[in-house]
Image (cartoon, rainbow, N blue to C red; front, top):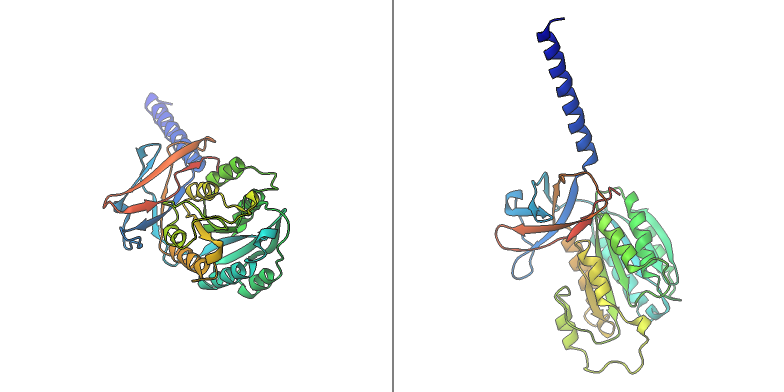
Length: 322
């Protein structure tokens, strides 16, 4: 065997090893998708953008956008988490009717599950695209007990993995703080960071509340409220806007806070759910391959628009591969 042939064999072997290593790295590095909501100065969605209009950064470093789509007709797997604690007794009917309307407003092929939560979460209806099944499950809810908000979200994040669609979101309707969960806020925030699920928490507050940039309907609603709070108000029935914001900001969703006494007047909850339904159909999805395999760490994300418009997306992800 001549030296030339031996050198050729060595070169072929080295190429094969390099290809195998490259393939292994490609298997280990997953596509990270980031759903982005793009609006103009008046809060209207901005259509017809291309990948060239965006700059996506991971840990401050620009990334190549490997996947790009505008989600006009993209089906969604949707979870609905509905608070049925005792304090929801006076407003559960309005909430149920709004959720029914929401379920019929989103696309017919979207699959939906329903979890209710009071002292503990209960799966009332597993994933279905049959809206009548969902309506029947909603009509059977009875408010009672405490508020296991974190346990419900934890269960929902597990359940939504079995959705048949790649795009996934959850609607959370509650009127109080968590009182009975075994899971903690940190637990569910970490699980949210490790998932690719948009969270849309809607808080129904019996109190006057502070204005906030994440809740566009807040100023108009708060202005109509009297300046004094109710004389008697249990802390467990107050909505913690910081918790709702933590859910939204770590997922790329959006938090809302509504005044309890204005839920019926003006159909405020229906307006909010209509806004969520519209938003799910006017977003962009950007995907990139990180330069390293999943390392179990949190990595920051930032998306900028070259044209200067406003973009809302999750601020990072936990690289666990789950």
